[in-house]
Amino acid sequence: MSFFPIEGIFFLTWPSMATETRTIRKATQSSTLSFATASKAIDGRRNSFYSDGFCSHTAEDETDPWWRVDLQRSFTITAVKVTNRGDCCAERLDGAEIRIGNSLENNGNNNPRCGIIESLAGTPTYTFHCNEMEGRYINVIIPAPLRVLTLCEVEVFAPLPGIAVLSSGICGSCLFFFCFFYMISHI
Image 1 (tube, rainbow, N blue to C red):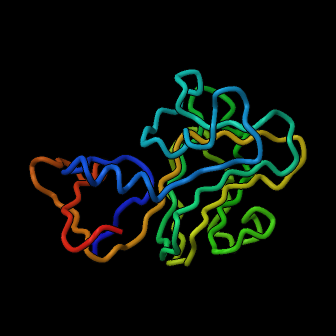
Image 2: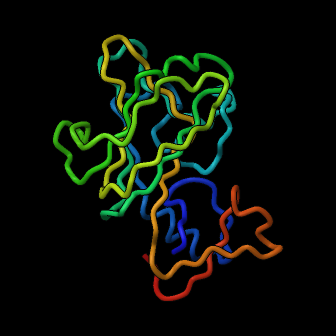
């Protein structure tokens, strides 16, 4: 079975599929600081320098700041890869929880937990294995007062029937870029 990122870095073989991929993701967050909208965390760039403009950011000193992506339908989630800030403040993400489920109760923050970010200092990108959790909504929440949530990239992985991962010379290393062959029908 092939796995592919629902969100994240894509190298697509047909421009028409890029449009279809973008339609399955809609991000929101509890608040927004300046230009750092929730969609910055699913723009396909793992750039971890906030000043470059590719990270999401909630307002300062918020209680229980959260970020959520809506996958538009439920998937069996195998992993979530999170890229933290690399320029400073890595400890801000300590204690954040990754939650996956189909409920929007409490903005989706009551869904089952996939993992807790204990520390990403020195490792800006980390993969959390979710043991095939079912869910439409992927949340990252820091359940604490006076916190700020910054995410530079969130990638969600799920098996998807009808999509094959190609390991041809075009793709090079499929660890970083994923080439998709449109086999049956679009999602």
